[in-house]
Image (cartoon, rainbow, N blue to C red):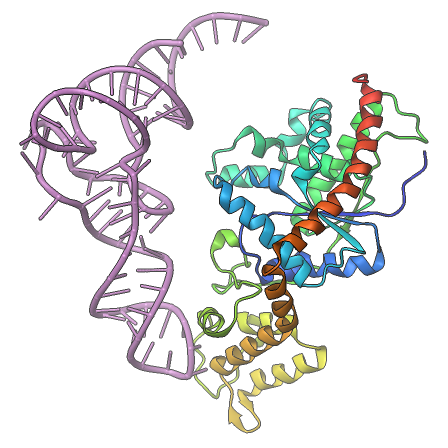
Length: 336
RNA sequence: AGGGCGUUAGCUCAGUUUGGUAGAGCAGCGGACUCCAAAUCCGCAGGCCGCAGGUUCGAGUCCUGCACGCCCUGCCA
C-alpha cells in the first residue's frame, strides 16, 4: 500500500471559551487549509483529551457544542472539512492501547508538556502521562499526512512518528506497506498573541479576549490591556505595546504602518494619539472582523440540531477511515 | 500493605489546644483617578470547611469509616 493521499488532521480542546489566541494560533489556519486540501481536512473536538482536566459533564458537553458552533460560524465548510467529536470514533482508544504497548516509558517521560505541567505542580493522572499516545492514535488512525501545529506541539508529532515506526517494526510491516504512516509536521505560522496582561494569551493565565466578545464587555476587556505610562501626545513604543501587537493581527500591512506612524509621533491627524485611542481602534477592528461570524453564530445557536448533524455526518466518514486502519492494525498484531 | 501528617474562598494559609455567628493575604469584580492601563484610594463579592456517619442543645473543631495527597517503613521484583 502506498502513501495515502494528503490529509490534514488537527484536534481542538473543548476546554472553554475560544479566544483570539486560539483563533490566530489555530482556527484561522484550520479554516484556510480546507481550501488547500478540500475534502481531506479532519478536525476533531478532543473530548477524550479534555477528560484529563475537565470534571464537569454538563460543561464538557456545552464546550464541545460551543467549539463546533464557533468553527462553523468562523467559516468551516462541512463540504470541505470534517468536524467531529473525538469520542464519536471510539476506535481511536483501541489504537491508543496498541500504541501504548509499543511505546517505552522513556519516550513519554521526555515529553516537554508533561514535564512542564508536573513542574508547575499539577498532579498527573495516568491519562495526562499517556496523552501523547492518544494523540498519536488520533493522527495515525486517519492516515494523516499533514499535522498543523504550533511549536509547542511539534514534539508530540515527532513522538507520533516514533510510535508509527515502532508499531510497524514490532509487527514486521513490509517496508513499502507500513501499517501506520508517519505524518509530517506543518509548522503553523503562529503570530505572537499577547493576553491582556502582556503574557501569551492563554486560558490558564486568565488573560484572554473571547472571539465573540462585543459591546460593553469587549470595551472593558480591551480597556484592561496593560500599557506603559507614556503621557498622552508623546511617542509610543509600538514594538513593546500589547495593544499594537493585537491590532497588527487585524490590519493590512499598509494600515499597520500607518498606525505605527501614529505611535512613533504620538499624534494622529495633528491630534494627540494615546493608548486609549489605540484601544478604541482595537475594539472596532475586533467587532468588524468578527461581525459576519457573530451573525452566523447567532443563527447556529438557534439551531443546535444543524450543528449536531454536521458533527454526526463528519463522524460517519471519519469512522470509516478509522475502522479500516484499526482493522489493519488488529490483523498486524494478531488481535484478528 | 502498615504508620505519620495533610485536605477550609480561584491560590497560599490561619482558625482544631479549650465545641458557641467561618477569617486574612494575594488574585478577581465594581467605582474614583488616568488618553487607556499600571500604581494608589474606596467598595463588593466570594465557601457542601474532602465525603459519609456518630456524639452534642450546638461540630471546621471531638469520635468512626472512606477517598485523595505527601512522607517513612514494609512487601513484590
